[in-house]
Each structure stands twice: as C-alpha cells, then as structure tokens.
Amino acid sequence: MPAFSLEPEQSAWCAELRTLAAERLRPLADQGEPGRVNRALLAGLGRLGLLARLFTSGALDLCLMRESLAQGCTEAETALALQGLGAHPVHAHGSAAQRERWLPRVADGSAVAAFALSEPDAGSDAAALALAAEPDGSGWRLTGAKRWISNAPEADFYTVFARTTPGAGARGVTAFLVPADRPGLTGRALEMLCPHPIGALDFDAVPVTADDMLGEADRGFAVAMGTLNLFRPSVGAFAVGMAQAALTATIAHTRERHAFGGPLMDLQAVSHQVAEMALRTEAARLMVYAAATAYDTGAPGVPGRAAMAKLLATETAQYVVDTAVQLHGARALSRGHLLEHLYREVRAPRIYEGASEVQRGIIAKELYTSYATTPDREAR
Image (cartoon, rainbow, N blue to C red; front, side, top):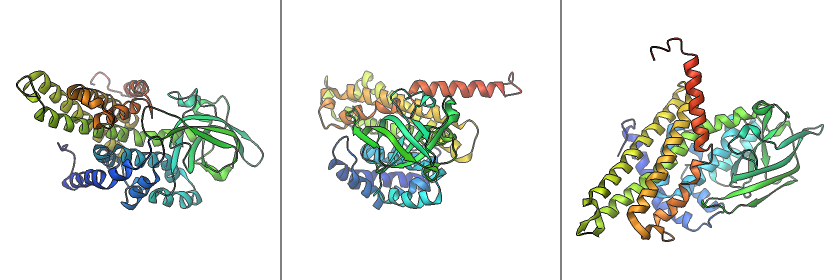
C-alpha cells in the first residue's frame, strides 16, 4: 500500500530493494552465524552500492532503504543500518584524513563500523556516561567500559563517546574515532535475544589524540544526538518493514487456512484484527515519512518528530508481529519460521537508540518548550 508522499520513482526503487533483499541478500544472510558480523553480507551490500548511499542519501531515502530491506531480509537491513550508525559521525564530523581512511572501506563493506555510546550505568541516560578520557600530555587515555554495542567486538573501528570534563554532564563529552587495534581495547560478545552482533568493550588506558577526535572537545554529545536524530526515524522504518512483513504473511495465512468450516478471513474476529494491523502499520509508516521529510527540509521540531516516529513505529511493530503470531498459532513459534524470527527481532528496537520511555520524555520536552516560546498560545 503506497503512501501518498512517494513519487513513482521512489516506489519503484523500494520494489527493487525488496527484490534484491529476497533474491541477492537473503542467501548471504542465511550463510551467516547469528550473533556474529556477516562480512560476506556486508560485501554484498557494498557491491550493490547500498552502503555508499548511506553517505549521499537524506533521511527519507534512508527510511525507504531500511523499510524495504527489512521486508525481505532483516539481517541485511541491520547490517546496513549499523554501518551507517557507526560511520555517520565520521562522515559528518571527521577530518579529511579520517574520512579518507575509513569511509571508502565502510562503503564497500570491508570495514565494520560501530557506535559506542551505552555503558553499564548509562543506557537511557546517555548524558551520565562515565568512560573517562584522562589527559596524558599528548592526548587522553580512555578508561572504562561500554556495553550493548552493536557489531562489537568484531568492528574495525568505533565511534566512542568519553567524558573529557568530569561533572559537566552532556557538555563534557567528546567523540573519538578509535580503531579496534588500539592497545588496551578488548571486547567480548554478548548473547542476546536479537540475532545481530552485540558486545561489550573494555578500555584500559586506551590512547587517543586530537587527531582521533570527531568534532570539538566537550561537544561530543551533540555529535551523538545529531546522529540519533537522523537514525531514529529510520529505526521506525525498520519497524514498519517488519510489521509489513508480518501483515503480508498474515493476510496470506488467513486466506488459505481453513477452520470452523471456512477460511480464517471469514471470521470477523480475525478479519478485524488484520484490519487493525494494517491501520497501525500505515499510520506508523506515514509518521516515519513525515519525520524523515522534516529532517531533510530542516523543519522545526525534528527531535520531537523523530521521537514520535520511532515510538509509534516500534510499538506498532511489536503489536503487529505479536498479533500475527497469535493468528498463525503454534506454527509461528517453530524455529526458522518468519514470524519466529520477527518475534525475536522486533523487541530490541523499543529499547535501543532511546527506549520508548525516553522518546516520550523527548516528545514532552519538545511540546512544553514549544508552548513556552509560542506568543499566541491561546490561539493554539
């Protein structure tokens, strides 16, 4: 069901991406090992030119890529998104030397990027991060830990956020590009419900210098939030793609599956649930597109719009996939079934890149800030 905002060329591109996901990328994904970086899949994304588009596309194109790939191959979607998340700070804030060294390799899939923000005691409250950057005369030494970092510990470089000014909250954080081979940097994989790679990193006086900084000293939190404002609507797009895949499977199943003397779709209780799944999926899709368009056009209120898009889409996907499982019955819980896979995939996006509760906080803050600065409040 195409949204009103898409041009014919965009709809055709989405259809092409869905075909590539199913026919070219799905076989590469199936050869991978759950919980590990699939470098063959990354190379496939690179050959198709999709990774390079991370650095030339706007927010809407990023959403269309993620939604379309997710419908045919969630592993390909996630591999692409994690490359973008880890490398966007380099693209947007890196020096010429940093960009020249890493971005071509990210684009062809030969270098794996990671975004290292979360810590054991600083997940949703990212401004409370405690990874210490201690001056050593020629630069800093990073000491502390990061947790729940996608692509860790197998990434080739990390965008790392560290505290350069103690006690300064969000104003005392600096972003660094840290190659994985730096002395003192170690990591381990974490076994999680979702099938993509996630790990923990430990920093034991890891050396960094001004040449490793991304942006300015003590301005790293803005680097992080700018990256998340771009990627949050596209997390919503990923969720919409999963919801659409679950909805499509459910329509087919309820047409073909017979019970109580006829196809399931003839039961009003079933058909109304399918209608509700479609309604919520389309509403989430439109909000994602609207948030992405606001980002691309520089409209006001982007943080609030991005938060709304991620919140609605991820909560919607959870509902749609869960309802799809219920309507399919026990077969949907069989290992290897599409819905079994989606059921494991769909839970994490409600937590990462800002949990649903964090998104509600952002929305509320934007609303009250807007109200306080609007002269004609009564007319609104």
